[in-house]
Image 1 (cartoon, rainbow, N blue to C red):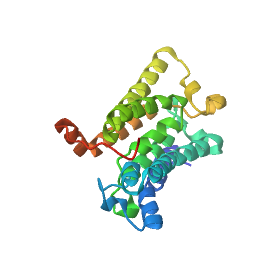
Image 2 (image 1 turned 30 degrees about the vertical axis):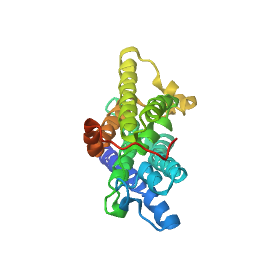
Image 3 (image 1 turned 90 degrees about the vertical axis):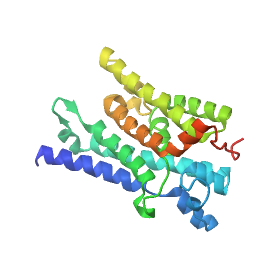
Length: 243
């Protein structure tokens, strides 16, 4: 089998599986099944956890956020397991490097894009925050730093948009810092992963993770464009459903 074809097909397959998983509109499904309403018809007009919580209550909002985090990470772990622990792995150790991390993080990128532009509900989705959160907190115990800055900002300012942008920035800075530390010193950053016990077969952050998270962060910021304008004008609304 042609190695180039295998790698190209794998890249597209991982991205597409991630996209179709990420496109599952949890907020819309919860709203229509349990409340007979579409959260996109209210509040900020999107199906993310914040707006779902604003419309249906904080418990529902938290459930939606959790489900959106999980849907982003399932295709990543699935791709990692299939590409690492099957005979396929031999095809991806090419050109002097193991391309497996590129492919499983592409699944995460696909999930984030699917979340924002879901094919199932006319491409009107969320803002990538929960997916971003899931990709960092459900892969590494260092993800608590995202939670620290996110929840700290949220507690002080009561603005989800500001908390998302600040928390996401610090997580992105951490991802790139770890990559350059590894590049300069050879320090094994898989120690920070939840799968670190598997050592050479563990999930890893590194270059591909940093690149994918950079792309998702840019999407996150762009999706918050209207919020940023309101923040500049001092008119951004504060949440009331999180005390």
